[in-house]
Image 1 (cartoon, rainbow, N blue to C red):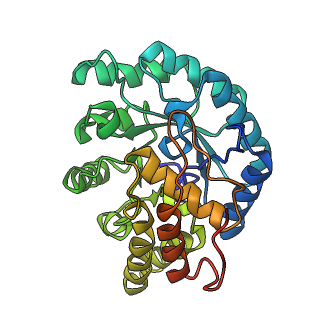
Image 2 (cartoon, rainbow, N blue to C red):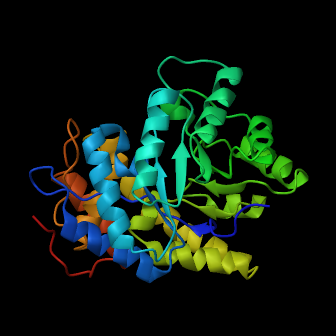
Amino acid sequence: MADPRFKGVIPPVVVPLDENRQLDLEALDRSINRMIDAGVDGLFFLGSSGEVAFLTDAQRYHVLQEGVAMVRGRVPVFAGIIDLETLRVIDQAKRAAAYGVDALVATAPFYALGGPRETERHFRAIRESTDLPLFAYDLPVCVHTKLDPTMLVRLGRDGVLQGVKDSSGDDIQFRWLVLENEDAGHPLTLLTGHEVVVDGAYLSGADGSVPGLGNVDPASYVEQWRAYQAGDWKRVKEIQDRLARLMSITRRVQATVGFGAGVGAFKTALWQMGVFNTNQMREPVQPLVGDDVAEIVAVLKEAGLIDENAAIRE
């Protein structure tokens, strides 16, 4: 059976930077405590929302070191060990373990692309090099490999994987994964990476969510999870509708696409809410400015996350 420690709302931590693109420790501590105080069940460092693809190894380890220290064991810490190929991922796993994380999260390899056999061997090789719980991160939009549900459940039965973070956007495959996992005795914890249709994943049988928007509004995702646990589906949908409207902060952005629009909108929202001190991004992505900031502020005011009369921060 899946480990009961790894359920519920586990936001992927958005990392604040100062104007010089250095880690803003004050803002990071404030954001971490805000999410923990809201009742989240874990925190995922060095995921896509944490701009892991833009970090040097030294920057990754700095985030982990500071993040683990700030969490202080209050919730489980997941660490992304995302890298090009297997041996580099194993090296990331060993370094992350040294910082005292509770679980590891790895994608398929994504440079020298292989097939199903190589992908399965990749996860088995990671398992041979670590005793920590290992989650597969299904992210085909970035790594160009869709993880097969049957393979994932097989790896779960064999003790290679302990869970899956599904950010594929493929709800049909996720439903099949849930069914195969149940038929096998639920060896895997299944987490959805959605922000907008978490209610649908819960209806399918997901064990929790990993929403980047949970940095902005952690309390609503926690309330939704608790309503799901209580069987209050009406409330689950009501909260999801509100969160779907809030997620429109990423759709209002006109100046850029990709990380700049997604993570850029999260950072801008947190900045305007006073959680972050800037909305600075990692090179080569630029922070949002002008009309994009104003659009995000308008959504935040509609959601009640900023006072209606508040001025836009400069």
